[in-house]
Length: 450
Image 1: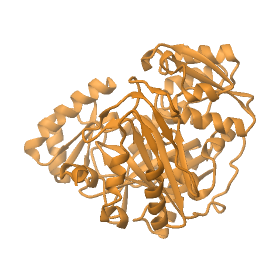
Image 2 (image 1 turned 30 degrees about the vertical axis):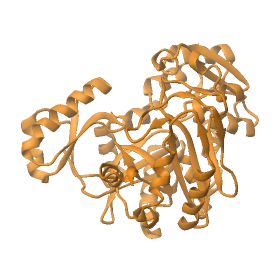
Image 3 (image 1 turned 90 degrees about the vertical axis):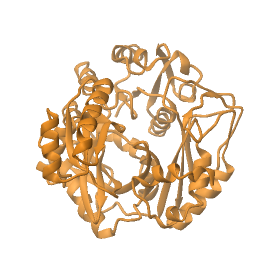
Image 4 (image 1 turned 60 degrees about the vertical axis):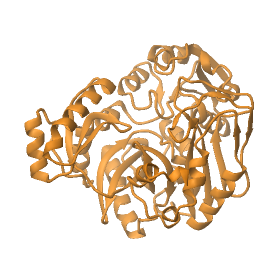
């Protein structure tokens, strides 16, 4: 087992890893930018080291600075959290070339799943159901229009190197294809430096279902059920739950086995998430995230496992601490993402926290790095906390979420907490009758003003 782990991240996920390390008796090293000198993960870690100025490119994304911090502190392994360098294959290769351990999958698997076309081809080879679409990249508007005619409109044009909703445009008919194609390519070039795109059939009312998988890197793998992440704004998740209210035990077992077998065949190491669109009882692969997800706590809640601890154990060469048969769902869990944003436009709202009170009680967990007097910097993602609740069933979890939101106090800035108060008044939320378009339509219809 490692003696010391460097955490190449910030905020609540860095703090999450610090806590796991402490429980395992492992010393933690927190890297930070000048803007994060007073951050909670810096205060809580055993050692800290500044790796650059506020901009991410000069600090948290600076591979040389992160590697130097490892050398200076004597850390043996790096936990990337999510975002930043977590899915950067070149960084992983640099870590391995320096004789250190990356707490996550291999550079090979990150590269394989980071390219959307290669990922889709790999998924199909492994027996994972995929969305009908183009074979490889599409290099002209004429080819794009032909594919649209072949599969039938609407279709969606996607960036090969895409993510987070960038480089994705829907063509409702042939007349709209040229604009969708050119816009997607332009966005992809600006965001990823790669303007290659591909085309898929656009599903009308799907849910976003993701399967949590875990591999030991030695040919073994398990799944930990699904999460429903269908409540999204601009392809960004805001509300996640497990198990999914639309998934039957039979469907869960079937798709879970397919995913677990796939990562076992790959020889995949660590945590991963295989994501699907789900419509009319059918699963369609869209991508695989080769890292820990923001919403991992809901899976931890219903299975009673520590996924960060498991990441560390597997990276150290130890076997999985649980078998598939031992993984039994207990109750229902929901997570809401609390962002420093001003409604109704969701504009960033950095500033100083004048008062903070975290909710508590049975079945309530909050992952946050906030504290009274903390100044939220304007340089990073607006996520400031995740409120997770667990109940015996979905009805109890929703009631617990309502109670916990009422206890939460974050003063000094605007947050997205009012969004969740409003959502909990909606019948569709209580019945689980929503899809990936529901939240956007609700917002457009003035749901926040009701």
